Amino acid sequence: MEIQAAIVLVIMFFLMLAFSVPVSFSIIASALTTLIMFLTPKFGVFISAQKMVTGIDSFTLLAVPFFILAGLLMSNGGIARRLINLALLILGKVPGSLAMTNAAGNAMFGSISGSGIAAATAIGGVMLPMEEEHGYDKGFAAAANIATAPVGQLIPPTASFIVYSAASGGVSVAALLMAGWIPGLLWAFLCMAIAFVYGKKHGYVVKRTEKLTLSAALKIIWEAIPSLLLIVIIIGGILSGYFTATEASGVAVLYAFILSVFIYKSIKLKDIPKILVDTAVMTAIVMLIIGASNVLSFVLSFTGLPQAISKALLSISGNKIVILLIINLTLLIIGTFMDMAPALLIFTPIFLPVVKALGMDPIQFGVMIVMNLSIGTITPPVGSVLFVGCSVADLQVEEVIRKLIPFFIVILMALLMVTFIPALSMWLPGVLGLLG
Picture 1 (tube, rainbow, N blue to C red):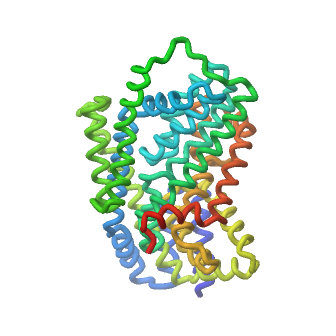
Picture 2: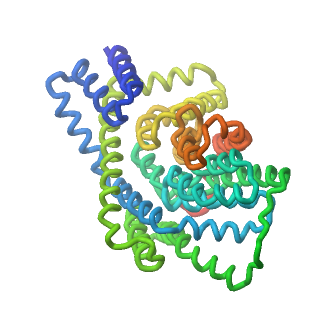
Picture 3: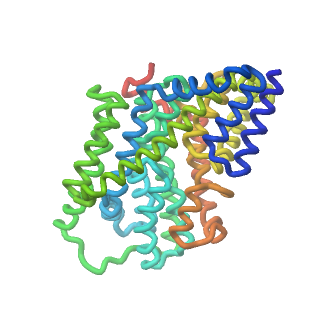
């Protein structure tokens, strides 16, 4: 009966996704149908409701709406231009500096906003016209923007690791946040290296029409510091023990509100109700997915599907490298058509036992799965950030994809390094004493 239940669950879930049914409803409908057909016909609805409530009844998940609100405040707070000016000031006349500035801006803005799509839109929207004005190939400029937009989903503060912590049974959020730093920066730096090489080859150098004075440089730095302080305050507060990762999200909201409304004055008080409504809508979507995924986890445990997948993977080969490559390939494909939160909630319980059996720490796997799913957002055929980035550049995917190939190569190199070199994820949390 368990096999039949697993077949019904999987077929119904992917069939509904194929018909463009929202992920949360696909999860609930397939899980509830399986419950009623094979486990408890009378109490299936009651158990589903109970599991949904317990799934979101978590102190850690309180951070999700606060980080969403902080991200929206910062996204609407006019920080993109300030971060771009800072990155451009540092990179100056380096070949390919505008594309490198785009990468650095995406890393900084993405970590603050927590969204690859927001980074591709806000930073790309400013940088692409500048690059075109300085003679950059439009397809390459769009590729550099798209390739680095998801970096912020690895660099804290990011809600992705909070969702993974909930899905994995309570892995330390503080350790996960620190574990994402080096992989995220590695991704950004490798893409910047591609931009440097391409820029040097094609003579892409910024030609300033007026001399940059010391006072102008100091003004650029001064205007960018408040935005960057958000990261310092949150990470510093968590590491020093002044507040937990969940409490840090509340501090982030307060700081983002003061910065956007009273310091930068880029958000008016009349804009706050709309931002709060957008936050409520996004939070409801995420929480519905989390609750639905908890029902799915309960049904999966009944069907024995995670254990069967684990046994199947381990039986394919005794070689750890082969199994991890299969998992990476699977997650890359999943990331092209499924959003980060549901993918983390569905596939963490399936693959985590496999990698633990291979000796991988849950913290390293957390970075690996988030990195995989982030790459999926810029990968054809249906990567969300890929299409948004092309739309911002007013180009077709076919016009950009060839220019993306060098970036894909170095990003996949970074993924393999994160997969097979534990120190990239584990060193920083270990140095900071965050490993249990």
